[in-house]
Length: 437
Ligand code: NAD
Image 1 (cartoon, rainbow, N blue to C red):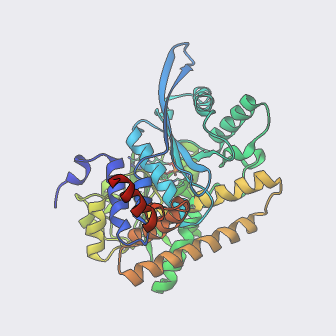
Image 2 (image 1 turned 180 degrees about the vertical axis):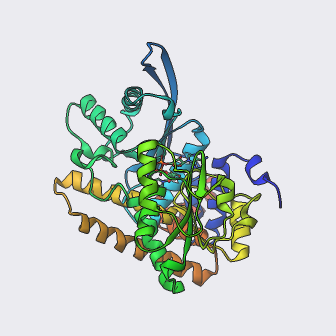
Image 3 (image 1 turned 180 degrees about the horizontal axis):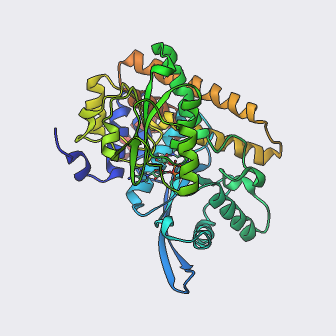
């Protein structure tokens, strides 16, 4: 197959479900698991009116999707982005259900989004939007129901506004209803870089298996926000050669390696990447001659149209859904190891769980404790997924999905399946005789 057909015919949610069904053939689950996972439990679409700074009124469209809560409260970030739509939010919510099962934490899957480009809004307008969104979804969230967190173009400050709005509505403090809050407002130490750190711990394991010398390993990172910047910082500090990074406007490439701390400082102060090395497009970044490629921006970046050009031996998906199914097949065929999003970026939700635990107990952990527990979780689950991949000789995504589906299956079918509800033989005969008489 060639071209970009893999993006055209079915929407992101349908394609996401197709991949779950495909991976299910490797999972030891009752068919009812998939039946139950074929639709989200609840979809909420809301209108959020916002008074703009110039006095005008704008109404933004928002969503909260609650996919599955069989293993624990719904859990998932809130995205503020112009291309947010229902198919995307449903996919992200389904992936959260799988992700929480992959790292075996007691949460289900949810996600939220608002169709907006927050870069066009003032801080005060974003605050009004964030608070309006929480008022619109307040009836369905809660510390034991559904726990939001940050995602693309939302951050710790956005979470502070949202948690504050929720407390105001409920007339009591309930910090555990939202994670990713600033440390001074009930956030956990180590939540800021947890997504990247989880991926970094996984890459450490792969490096160990492959006998890597970090100084020889060239890394390209697409997306220079929370996930991308922290990944660059951690890898650079560990001696890896981060040769290219990009943001929504394009990227830069320095084959000898970038001065990552300077890049981060420039991006923070100027809200743009510095003009160093060679300017490249996001498309060119994906095809660079590197050892590790880290998509850390949006979905559907590696497709049938460009997967064959990828030169990296390892792709670490810090973004959610950056690789299409067809790209997966091409990369697998070339021997590229794709560490799937549901494992690679699960450090974020893992430390969100730590934050929720700390909020509920009122006892707060030191940074080392967060890092030690995160590393232990990521290593343990990486080993389980890796062993499954090797034993069944399947791509790592299918292995991660299979592990997740088995854990979800145990919860979803705990009340019994069709096999448990067959009438007993004697009853069947009585029913049959009764029907005749
Ligand atoms: P962010 O808002 O902090 O950063 C997003 C980055 O992507 C920015 O640098 C932006 O310029 C860049 N970007 C936007 N559009 C782009 C495009 N078309 N091409 C290239 N770059 C583009 O968001 P984030 O929290 O870092 O999220 C990035 C990815 O990581 C998303 O897929 C998100 O779902 C995933 N993720 C985030 C977390 C988390 O805890 N923040 C957890 C798990 C997964």
